[in-house]
Image 1 (cartoon, rainbow over the protein chains, first blue to last red):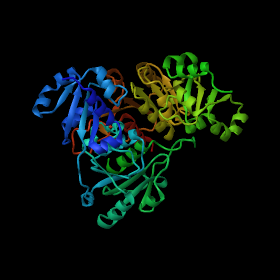
Image 2 (image 1 turned 120 degrees about the horizontal axis):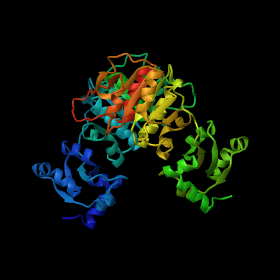
Image 3 (image 1 turned 90 degrees about the vertical axis):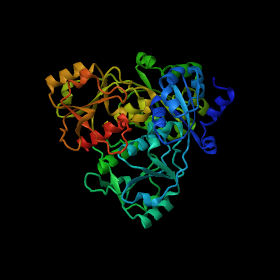
Image 4 (image 1 turned 180 degrees about the horizontal axis):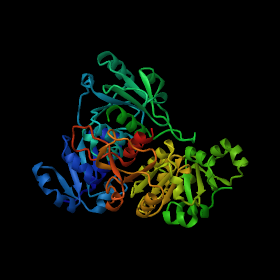
Length: 254
Length: 254
């Protein structure tokens, strides 16, 4: 059965956040990411794939009774959000997870204040997964986790790390009351990460490259952690947000 | 004077590597990057900018006697390589630098073996700049440093870090003979970066996420450095190439 015009417009609509939210669905593309999706607990609505991909994955498609549809490379290009589509595009179901603050006791979590570059958010999710961080709490101004570019940059880690979008000021107030472990901020003017011992239980707050962490959120942080610049050039403004997050997280949990 | 049809096609041609090489020119876009270009030693062929940008930068344009052309936001969109063009696009001159291996004595340098994601290469250049690394030696299979996406991700660091494209096997042979400081490889199966002391004078070799470091290059490395995974999930394949580079570089030079 080949893809219908209705299906094409249905998938293309899912390129938009509004429609992803309305349908509680999102797009997962490419061999690696779809492979990870198949091995995750996420539900799958349908899979559009080339004959080659279907042949190679016929066993798992049958075992899991997954609905799929063969598609030509040209049609895949039409529905894809990638510049170079790669054999398969799956429509996955957004899980309905309930966030429990007590799950953060004796854990390390991230709070993201307004990072809106999808590549950066996806890379941070991948870093979190590598270091065993299970929870990321995002401000509503942060890029949506189901944005196709986030999904692609997260490389499957999205299926293993919970992202929760809530008001982070209320969240931090709640965290201080119920969990009360240290809240660190990644900041340009703080203490060098080389000079402090950071608790492996607590929170690291990350701001965007352009706006940093908001004043209100910053006032709720216990201390500021800084990556010291070693260049003789004063111009280098800052590190990429995901790179800075990774360096600090490695220092704490690596 | 507004932009001519010839100028539009001239700039659009520079989106292609072949034309950038033929003309020894490249595109620098956006307020931040062009600001860094103006403060660099790089030559500028011409600047296309909105009236607003020209007004705000009239002093430096006059002081430096820079050729510029006012352009409408719509025309900027036509010549831009960015999805969201930002006020200004400059055509910069590729410098003709001669690479001297003796400049690497008692320095730390990077060797890149085939990273072809422009965002990753640009981010690595930015990290190098932050840590005072002046030289990156790239295999000819590595993405071109003047690719617009590299320029954008490097955020001005491109003007302060030398990228040299040469055969890296011959380079490493030469390095061992003339400089003879340690050559480290970033690798999934090596010694944990937490368990070794790494010399701040030497070379770190980085491979691509998909292909890693080639066998021939690997045979010229003295030791392999690994970032240990902390996740309970076995699936997380690897860290993003730029993130892995940053974590190791911070460990060595941070």
